[in-house]
Image (cartoon, rainbow over all chains, first blue to last red; front, side):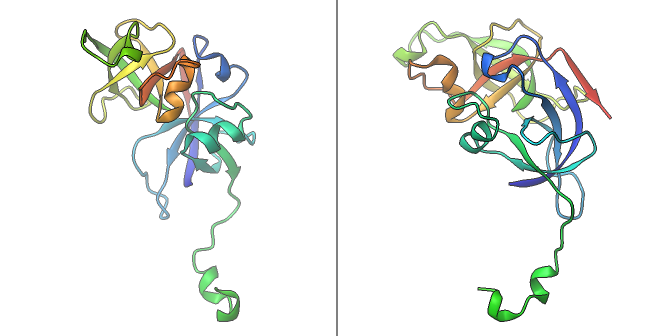
Length: 100
Length: 88
């Protein structure tokens, strides 16, 4: 998955039937330091994410179509989580015994 | 999925039999600000789009699903026409 930010929405009426009834978000993948990582993409929303939210973006078809309950459909990206917080050094603080 | 603009067509008479009857289009990837980005690619068309239209396409095995039950060998297929993009 990638960390990303929802930067907008896409409206499309002429599209594959499996895309009907699903919100299409314009999503900007991010690096850990918050800078842009490549170009924005289109992803279907599985968790009611809003514009401006930091989200979890899955970029592989099977996971994407499953998360929006559209099996065997031409969908290769989906927003499957809204990120509250990212703790980069949290792992370093956990005692070695737990860190297998 | 990815944003792009239809910039051309490809004609190929000798090709995989499962590609017969499919439209081969050339797409230029674009950013949401409609700026060209990345290199052009050849895609199939599952929607019936016109030249110059702003579209979005799907990549990988999933891009052959619009043609099921036929097993069409494609790794990129146009799956929608973009009407509007609302950016914050």
